[in-house]
Amino acid sequence: MKTRTDSYRTFWPLYLAEHRSIGNRRLHFLGTGLAIVFLACAAILADLRFISAAVIAGYGFSWAGHAFIERNRPASFSHPYWSLYSDFRMFALWLTGRLGAELRRHGLE
Image (cartoon, rainbow, N blue to C red; front, top):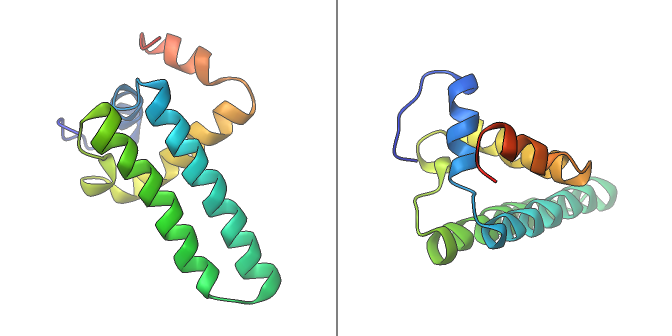
């Protein structure tokens, strides 16, 4: 993310702008979805190895999307907590069918 911001309210539109490509968003959805499954497995099976798998899947697919599709730097390097929250927020908006409207609201689709 090129612009430094001091509030989440201004970070969110910048985050969305770094995820304009549907291919990048799909990799994020895959990584976030797998991370959720692995975290559930860790809790259900009481096996901490699934936590490592969740981190690798979540960040691996996301970073690949930024490196090979968007060709930009992931926001997780400059704003790790806001970025993680935003990954789950974007995932939830996609699951509920509201991501397109959010992108349009910010002039991104």
